Amino acid sequence: MKSQSIHFKSRSSAALDNPVLQQNLRQFGSGGLALLRARAVEAYGPAQFEGLRDAAKAIRERALDNLAVWLEKFETQAKARGATVLYAETAEEASDLVVEISRRHGVKKVVKSKSMVSEEAGLNEALAAAGVTPIETDLGEYIIQLAGEAPSHIIAPAVHKSKDEVSDLFERHHHTPRKTDIPAMTREAREVLRSHFLSADMGISGGNFLIAETGSGVIVTNEGNGRMVTTLPRVHVCITGIEKVIPTLEDLSTLLRVLTRSATGQAISNYVSFFTGPRRQDDVEGPEHLYFILVDGGRSNLVGSDLHDMLRCIRCGACMNHCPVYKTVGGHAYGWVYPGPMGSVLTPAFDGIENALDLPQAATMCGACSVVCPVKIPLPDLLRTLREKQVDLGLRPWQERVAMRLWFWFAQRPALYALATRIGVRVLKLLGNRDGMIARLPFGSGWTEAKNGGRFMPAPEGRTFRERYAAMRR
Ligand code: SF4
Image 1 (cartoon, rainbow, N blue to C red):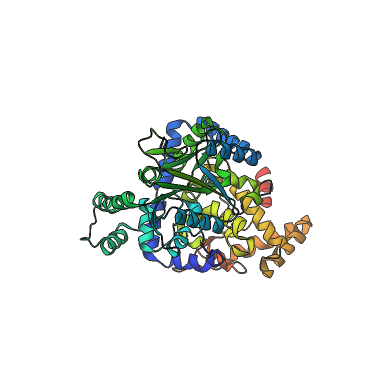
Image 2: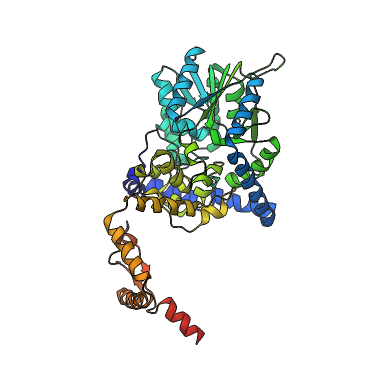
């Protein structure tokens, strides 16, 4: 998928100007997944959940510390059970491998369950160009495939769509009378998809985890489509990132506990599907051929780097569910596969810091993302690291660089700094209106200029923190 992240600002503006999207985002932000997570944590016990997060972090660290070893072990075990393991250095190479496999097995139709790595690879476009029809079967992915759009959330890809928009889509593509009842719409999609499950030659899934000790792939789903994709067609391809490997099944049991609670607030998802080798003689179901395509796509560059922690990500989506920026502009504004705080780290890391200039800035640094991350990724720290890199590489605007240098100069001269801040807060107080709000901030209009009449900033009371602190001590 070609990144559009360089256009974050214009895409955000378009998102803010779209009243339907804003309404859908308001609905999403008013509780939803964040609320469900909070309830699940409360039910589990907040202190115990903290312990679980520590354990999950340690498991992911252990896997990443010896990534090559665990990948080798996974490959040995998977091959011993009859699967084929292939490696792709880039996402595009992964697409080529899938196309090659589909040619080898005479594939005409593919059913897919959700795979973010296949989005990285632009797999649907590559398959279509090779004469293979890809059908998305996760309901959200199916909806956006009909709409010709990309996912806007990693676990709820069509969260930006309203029920009415989906009704219109189904009416247009299914050629059936328009329905507005959600169970009826779901039933209709299920009926359409069922014939595809039965007629597809190949299934493609992502992989939430790869288990090194058994050579198994694991997917965590709620709709059952993943189970049909992995068992009904005669060929199955699991395409996932190299960092998804974990040592043991025991590790999986811990990670599942944090993943589902963090993602959807469920104690366990409706389906947890394992695929270990192709169908054996006595098996009643399963593919005749099983392939794992393990994609690097920039991941190995992160190992041991200052963004290493990001590799722990288990793609739960909790960081975006709690991010005020994501909840305001939605996922498409981010311009690539991964939105929200995790995307603001992953996109520059995978696609080049110069191609995603505004993403590390697209954060309020409130810290909510790292507080809810099930594997304790310090997202604000990583965003700050990326900001520092931008400065080092001279990628920030000259005004910002001058302002930073000025601040640096003052900060080294405490008396002057105190004087300057004393003058500053008094000027800001004068700029406040009768209600004590500043309507237009000089040299910082980005903070106060906004759609629909602007955004107000509370004026300070006219004394610096130091002055107030000294007065309080007196
Ligand atoms: S960064 Fe953390 S919270 Fe965000 S998707 Fe990854 S694991 Fe979940």
